[in-house]
Amino acid sequence: MLYKRHDKISKSYDVIIIGSGLGGLTAANKLAKDGYEVLLLEAHNKLGGFATWFFRKNKEFIFDVSLHGFPIGMKKTCRKYWNQEIADSIIQVKDVRFLNPQYEIKTDFTKTDYTQKLINHFKLDPQKVEEFFFFLSSMNFYDDQSMTNKELFEKFFPNRNDVQRFLLEPICYANGSTLDDPAITYGIVFSNFMSKGVYTFEGGTDRLIKLMRDELLKNGVDIKMNSFVDNILIEDSIVKGIMLNGEKVYANSVLSNANIKTTIEKLCNIEHFSADFLEKTKNIQLNTSSCQVYIALKTGETIDHIGELVFTSTKDTFDTEDLLDININSRTYSIYYPEIRPQEKLNKVAIVSSTNARYADWKKLSDIEYKEKKQIMIDETIDHLETLIPDIREKIELIDAATPLTVEKYTHHPMGTSFGTKFEGLEVSMNLQKEIDGLFHAGSVGIIMSGWLGAANYGVIQANSIESYLYNLQPKDEIHAQL
Image (tube, rainbow, N blue to C red; front, side):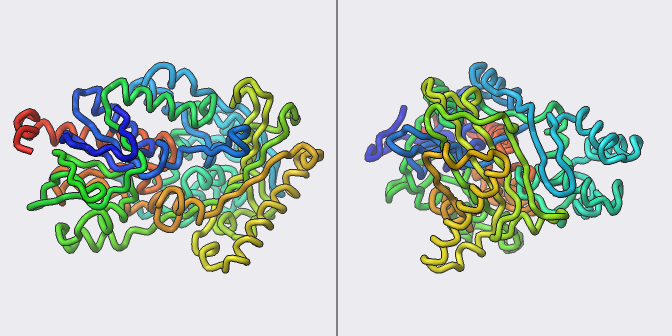
């Protein structure tokens, strides 16, 4: 059932899930379909986490938040853990473009096309290209993780900054990778995309989340939004439930879809954790944030097809730190043509410019400086977009923008992180249940679990762990009776 805002919860559950990002949603659906009683709590007024959208001008305009593009694996995950309608709505993005001083390239982002571009355009040794792809496909979590992305590229393509840009830039936008991050954080994600290219969801994020909500309710998940969890209840290193608005809600297990540091340091009493575990938690680095400029064209206005994803930069050479500069020089445009995002049969086009960013750069600004910098970001984005679409100004009806502070406000992610944590967050997340019986985590950790596919699959992984835990408890009817 869908609880109303002021409804009190009077029953107990097998699982309580805190947060409804794609990891929390997918875990909830799998557990419910497998027969468990699930309560899903969301602090915001809609489901989806960072997979979200917003309306403007009395719902005449709708914008999708964040850069949308994921591997073909999302189709399989949705078919298996959601339903066929969701899976069938995942469509390929066939026109991905790179425009920068080093090259201008159009690709469908498949391994076949990327291989041809590396050999024919960049003039690389075919054997080296083959060895590179084989090396990436062989990477796993048990390998030595000391190699950095920079070392990986120098190993196969030394002194080729242009090749680094072609290989790494799209993944930087997908999960916040830098040249200094462990190579595994790049290799696994890039290999996933190199299966059959980039995909998106036809009809937009709002349609996806509506279909997911309907599926959750059909499978018996209880959902309550506008619900800020006070804390997780723990006794003798065992989860007992959660405290919600001063009321106890009991459960045999809890899955947090919040940030891993928030889960441990704010939702739990840290005295329940070992000193070594807390030290590892303290040392987790948060990943970077992002900015967006949202542009809606007037009803009926069209543009020439310039690609669905367009990676642009004015910098002569590539460096992942440049992508974070508050003085923006690199932008990725997501173009929502009417056929990709039908809006009630209205012929509308939306353009979203995405840029990686540092939270600290925006947080330190005064209110006046913040407004000025935000307007500069908007103005410069339109100036740049005009080089791609010369008559764009006269076609625009509405513009909005978001910064890392916006991300922080609406997602409650610490420091407005768009990509969760750096790689060390994964170990802490996976081992949470070893510290507290019945406490689990599924969120953007270790960079690899960022993005739509990573988040959904991590939800499945943790749902399996929860089922194993619950299987070893007493029969659930007996536990519910005790509670």
